[in-house]
Length: 602
Image 1: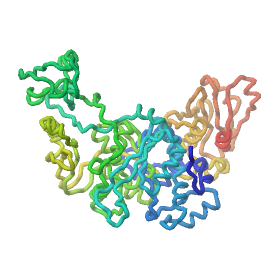
Image 2: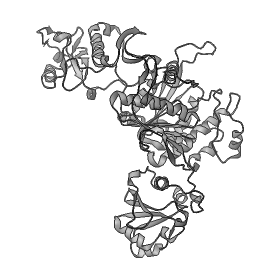
Image 3: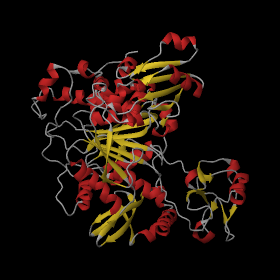
Image 4: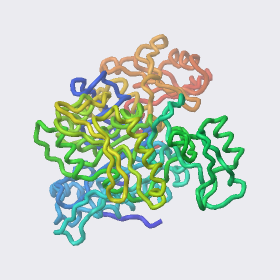
């Protein structure tokens, strides 16, 4: 496979391995709800360091990643600031910010993205997906980088999103689209099997006959073509006798129709029982449509609409943020790539659109999706997190809020079945009418559009939810622990050691003190027949004492506590390997602070 080459690649190829671990420090006063690291998170800090900090808990657990990195237009003023140990790259730090006249700006962008994408790959679940928005400046280079990190056969597709509907007359070609690259850890055909949602088919749920099973939509009970065993007469509840529509047959044989009608009770006759039969589809029955690669602005929003929404949310203060992504765009990505209990990560969080989209999706279907946002700029609190606070609690707003409820492309065949379209509109009005002040139906750009409008006089209602705001703590420098320069807390060190030894995230609930065996001993968990232990207290004098050493009596008690092999992280040991072997104690020792490096190079 051809490889993308760029200046500095050899220096950043494994840079993600040298990035120090920095624990997440919760800022309780800046979040909403009880602080916790296993819920919604907004992390303020360099996203390379933040991604490394997330590994101990979230490696392989993220279901969907949506990122909107710098497009590298030359006018964004972004800066390359990674601490890569290379004189050439250190020279780049003096050339910041990256401008249009920088002849190496594409190389610098590739160097910036490479280690971040490596860590994102490690955080992504095996069947998860990465969605990355770009314009023409870097999309080709991004494809080359992602092909190398994920594998060219893990490329899912490239989507064209209509980001603007107005024409830019100053440009050589008016830029109407941005690109969305989609990759997965698994192969394309495998991801297709695990794809959690398909694009909506335009049907909306309703319950005009008060079916006790709940809301449903319906599809015509007819099929194109002619099959002799699917041509028969159907009698409606009003006594009307129907033949199949001209040029079509019924959607199933007569015995199947009777089963659907009398046993499954999924046949619906519109027009008060006088219309042609339709088949009820409950949410679990709907298959939807295969997503296409052209997403129009009137379906998923554009930058003009997203900027307007941002200004509505911050109507009381001035906000200057260029081209935020529409919530509808992110909602479609997570609807296709994630389930209703998925974990969604955005490491270029910007104005917080991804969190807004997750909260909106949860409010709509009572889902339990979670988000993790990472933002390194100073506005992480005042813009990113503040938007999320306002979306959760509600915000001051006067005007009309609109929400698209139905979009049905009009074709000649659909116009011949106008009553079916009117039934869909009626279903929307019945189901969603109480949520809005009015329901409007219009025809625009060849589609029937039904919109709910809500007049807001003082405040837009909140979507509910909670999140924890975090910053990055001091790096855990393993070789400085016994020197007393930096003593991390127990959970941070335990998570780091567990992930390094097992390449899996730690479950904080499994970290348990084992004071009955020895002071300062903690059981980290069990994986693959091996139990992991840590002897540690953030106390320099104690760490230097004999109480912190692995002794024969401690090894005996550990071996007796559970079958299988045991690995003990400790500052020292007072028992030889030969003595452990003579007593047939299956206990191994990993010294602190050098254990991390020993395992990385093993």
